[in-house]
Image (cartoon, rainbow, N blue to C red; front, side, top):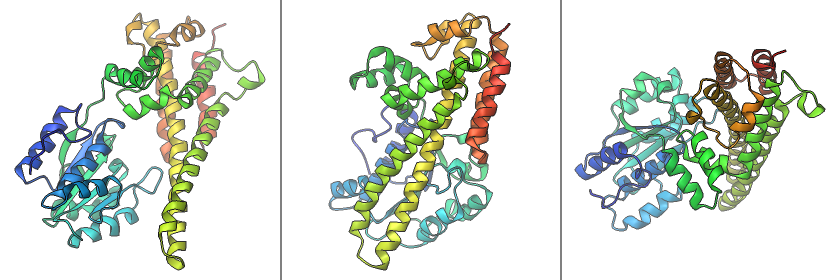
Length: 380
């Protein structure tokens, strides 16, 4: 098997391009790959492109295969997304992967399984998967995806060929955003704040992203002031929760529209009702995940703002990420100790991590705000 161009999604990633191209060219690709690197760098796109090439090999109409892989309609491609907000469940893999991997392909020479967010795989799930990862049938190929390779269990990592996707350079992200009509200053700041994540850069450059940044920065300013002095600032974390709720509703509405279309393809009767219930649950899961994702991003933005203030306090303005707001933010944070500002970054990150333990988001944000206000509030 050979390809004349890099696989989609690997154009900016030499390591991934070389590893995957070599596997395809040799005709003996690995039975298990682990794609790792920041979100929005092309991992999912590359996984779909690799699946298409694996399934198209030997087919008399390879373009048809590629088209069906692109639309998730090829019977020998299984794409698994964790159903838990922060964990992959045994039910996610038991039949869809472990059971299916023992059965021969429907029409291709191979079966391909793509598993997202494998860092959420706990010991129980990993133990169930070990035999499939270690001794799969000759026609099985698994492509695992993670944004956090440090959280992937060693028993899983050791059974896969690692494929690295590096953070995208800010200049590349900014140029891409500018080509889409985003003003240069917004594109540059969004690219730097995204930390190599292409999806995040695009979100931050959008109107929704600007509103989210404004809420995160308002919470930072209010903490620097030692607390709110106006009714709107008495609970500055409410704005972040509102943005998260807006995102949840938007995702659920879009998923509901797609669910109606998909359910309409199922035959009437009991089977259609089962499909409708499954799609409804999937929409709710997507909405919850989107809600949490916005809060986590807001906390990342708050941490970035405190980090920028620490950079200014330590005489390193060239390291600032939010270049477009640092002058005004710096005035609010003048006179703060750099060590306290760095500690504020740690508090934001600790709160973000605590959300994965299903704590109350509102209580976590409220507690964070009061701790920040005590730590970096305006000196007397």
